[in-house]
Each structure stands twice: as structure tokens, then as C-alpha cells.
Length: 192
Image (tube, rainbow, N blue to C red):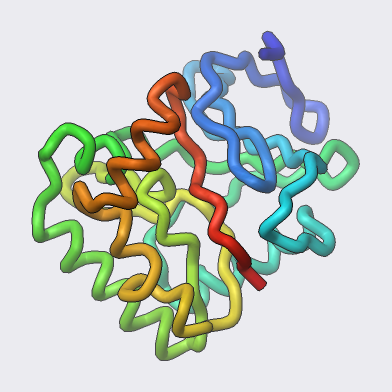
């Protein structure tokens, strides 16, 4: 793990690796006494997802989700040359942690259903895997920017819901990834 990363020349001390997704590594970083999330895009192969320009997709998806009204961390800076995105830090436990610890609450599902209402009306899906959602102050935040055109098979009710409680899919995934401190989303057989 690097000790320091820069975004457009500004230095950030790396405090921790928060997780690795199919598109990048997310680090908790700090500068001038404040904490942020710095996402370093990567180009590692992903058998189940096709990428175009990842950097442009991050910016485009953020703009799209902002317009839809999804609660998420603010995009603070973007460094195209280094393929880095700086976001505000939403401190809290992930839904994955809530499910694993048996602390999941109906109010978080209700908030997700509200998000789905906005998303589906805009013909949009997000990545519903529970590591992509953090609870802070009782509010649910989508901490990724990934979104895609709506397809019923990948909506919350047909895919995401399988991981928002201790279902066989969740338990199997958790058993296979217990060595990983910050699990990433499972690899569905095919995502367009």
C-alpha cells in the first residue's frame, strides 16, 4: 500500500485500504486534518464486466446519479492523468457489515427502496452489492458511482436482494471471502 498519493499535485497521506472493486482501489486518505476517499482506477482484467473509459465513466455516472438525486459522497477532485478520483468520506459501517453482524434494519431497506424508485424512473441500475452502501447518522449512502442502463435481471429485487440478508448467496460469498478484510462484489455469470 502506498504511503502517499497525489491528486492534481495535492498530497494525501494514505491511512488504509478500504476496498478493491472491479474498477479500482479505494483508500482512506487525509490532508490538513480532514479525511477523504481516494479511488485509484486500475486496469486489471474483469471476466464479467466490460469497461470503456473508466475515468470518464466515473465522472459521467456521478453526474447522472446526482441528477437522479441519489445520496452519495461528493466528487471533490478528479485527476485524469493519474486516473484518480477524490470523494468526501462517509464514515460508517457498510450494509455488508450490518448483515454479517445480524444488525440489519428494515429502515435501511426502506431507504434503498426509495432510491430504487428514483433509479427505476430514470431507467438506471446501480451496483446493489452491500459493500457499496454505508450508513451514517441513520441515513443510507451509495458510496460507489457505478450505474448502468436499467435491466430487470440486475435490479435490486432480482439480484441485489440476494445479498442484503443472510441468504444462502450471502453466506456462501462471506465464507469464500472471510480472509478478505474488505470484500468486493461477487462475480455474476454475466453482466452486460
